[in-house]
Each structure stands twice: as structure tokens, then as C-alpha cells.
Image (cartoon, rainbow over all chains, first blue to last red):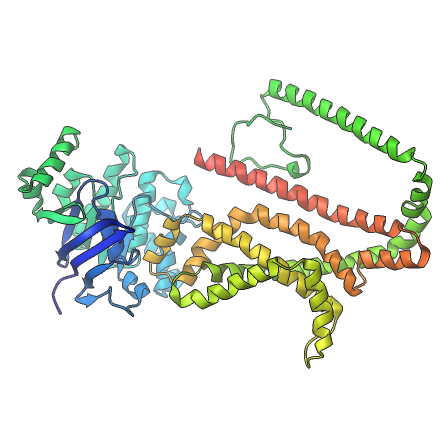
Length: 249
Length: 296
């Protein structure tokens, strides 16, 4: 068994005749935080959904703890119970309170009794400054609060791997900070994370490694300092130049 | 009556508004004045139209005969207890059938919404059922089940016309109601399904805890519409000889050659269905306002 937490081998995915991932290789060790950067449509989001088995891949393999999760006959529900994904649009369940949103996964998928699940949920809410909101419905919360609840909902299933899919892209600028702080805290806890993001400052700050995706491939990867300051590949340079021009770096 | 949309207040508790429609909003005098004038015009024109129609009917040469046949007070008094007793059976049939329909249709819709090749045979079965049943007139289903099944003389199978009549209604309405539920399930965004699955929930759990609760809220007005429809369609089982309101009226008619019993039955069905229709409207309107308030 390899020591890697996550390993993608030659992953290929098309939607119809439109290739989205054309041979992605990526290795992640335990406690490592990898940021995926790249323009919209470069395949970041699809890559995360493939890892979570929400989108079936066409070719290649995805290994978690050395086990091929894309092999036929693998129980998808069990695979998903070991990891969590947070989406750009929060996707909280609007008909449930914050507390029920958080405890649904632990109770139904992991069979944890309600009292215990609620106890843990309340502790998580407290830790991230949302204790007051436990009984609220999602539409009563700000975008930043909703996204923090979504992160807590993901955490509550006690995943070994968290996938974050542009979780600040739908937020007002003044709300981005509170969500990114939560992610920084997760890094300190030693969580293994794959983060698709447009926040270059955040990537520089939190990532152990940055991967630049272009045309469905990882074109360049390395420590954030190197990728963001002195990129080698012309496509990376071009992408970062555009971000600098837009005043986002 | 087109009312100008007032300021939205999601917490506003609307009282008996479901009987009267939207209430004029305070602080909107002009709108209210225009509304009042519009209402007056509508009221007067309706009065004139109904008056003309009544005059045309009442002045026709055949009216006295029709009045004796359909609107005879003496016959009405005589037939009322029987029709009312029959109507009570209609109410019971409706209650039992509606509960079974809501449950069975939901099961059908959930099966139809399952994904993946493993569930293909089940899905095909359900689609086949829905297509078949929706393709047969309900009156034929009642006749076929009501007369056909008892004729088979199967051991342990009920022979009662009442039983098979209600069964036919459940079989037929479930097919339509399943499609209503399915529209509701399809209207829940795909991201909700993904979100639930990503938490490790199975397809069944995702349907039960995430998709169906939202779907049912989305289609409640359509389900209420089905209620109104079924309230009257229960009368169709009269054809099997079940002694509900229409059948009682028919029996009375066969005995006396007077049709007033049918009018009595019509009055009862009206009394039962109009409140439900008003409630359905009131509920949809409240729901629409809530949604607007939410997206504001």
C-alpha cells in the first residue's frame, strides 16, 4: 500500500465530445493542502467531483489510501463517507435547520445516534462562532455564515479528506475572510485538503503546493512561492499576469 | 381582481383571507379605491348577466315542467336524508382513497426517480404502470375491477363493489399523482442531490430526507387540485351499485320519476368542494408570497 492519501492516475473525463480532464496525475500525502488554480473551465471543479464519485471518470484511476475507488463494484456510499466536499453555492438543505443540516450525514450515513450527533454539531458550531444559529433555517443566514455551516456539515462526518470547490466564489468580498479563516484552522488541525480557488493570496498562504490546471491537465505544480512568483510555464505566466492585471494578486 | 403587489412581509399572518382572497393593504388608498371600483363593475356586470340568463330560463315554456322535475321542494325534503346518507359514504370513500393515493403515488414517484442501471427493471415497471393506467378511462377501470375481479371468484379476495370501486380510484389517481410528485422531485435542484450523496447518503435516504420534503412543498397546490377532483370522482362508483349520493338520487328517480335528488347531490358535492378549492388558492398565494419574500 502506498503512503499517499490520494492519487490520481491519468484521469480522463469528457462531457459529450467536450474533453474536460485530459490525463490528470496528482498525488497528495496525508496532511497536505493542495490548491488548484486555473481559469474557469480548466477542470478544477470536475476534478473534485470525480474524486467524490459524483461524476464518473472515463479513463484512469483514482486511489484513496492506496485503494482504487474507481474500480467496478466499489461501494460509492462507503467511499464518500471517508471524504467530504463543499460546494461553491453552499447547497445547504433549505427545509432543515442548521443543526439538522449538520447532523443528517452523521445520523443517516454513519449511524450515529441523534443526541451524540447533535452534541458534536453544537461543539463544532461553537468552535466556529455559529452556536447561536443552530436552530435557524439557512435562508436566515448571511452567505458567509451559510458557507461556514456547509464546511461544518462536511467536517461533521469526520472525513480524512476534504474537497473545497471554489467555496468563496459566490460570496461578497467582505464575507470571504471569515470562510477562509475556517479553512486555515482546518489546515492547523492537519486536515488533508484539495482546494479549488480563485483566491491567489489565500493559496499562497495556506497551500503546501499549488497546481495550475489548463486545458484539463496539470501544467505546472510546485510550492506556492515558486508558482505564484516565478512560474515556469508560459500558460501559467499568462494566467497569473491576467490576475495581476485585474488587481487580484 | 388584479391587486397591485403590496410590500412583502413574510411573517404576516393571514387570517381568514383564504375565504376572501388577498386583503387590501393598508397605506395603499389609491390602489384600494381603484380595486373597489373594479369590484363594483365586476359585481354589477355579473348581476346583469346572471339576471338575463335566469330570465331566459324562467320565461321559457318548458320551465314549469323542469321545475317540477328538478326543483320540487317536496321531493327535495323527501330525498334529502337518503342522499345525505349516501354522501357520507362518498366522504368516507374519499378519505380512505386519498390517503392511499398520496402514499402509493409517492412510492411510485420515488421508484421512478431512482438512478442507475440496477433500478432499470423497477423503473420500467413503474413507467409501464403509469402509462397503462393513464391510458384507460377511469370509468372503465371501475367497471373492469368492480365487475371483473369478483367474477373471478378467487378465494380470499373481497367481492364487495365498494372495495373494488375505491381500489379502481386509487389505482387510477395514483398514476396521475405519481407524475405530480415526480415533477416536484425534478424541480429540486440537482445540487441538492449531489450534496446529500456527498455526505454518504444512499439514493433512498437522499430521496426521503432531502428531495421528497422539498418536492412535496413545491407541488402542494397541484396535490390539492387533485383532492378537489377526487372529491367528485368518488361518485363514479355509483355505476357498481354502491349506494352513495348519486346512486340514492338515481334510486329515488327510478321510483318517482323526479330528478330533484340529483340536485340535492350536486348541492352536497358543491358544499364540500368549494372550501377545498378556496383553501388551495389561498395556500398557493401564500406560498408564492413566501417565495418572493425569500428571494428578495
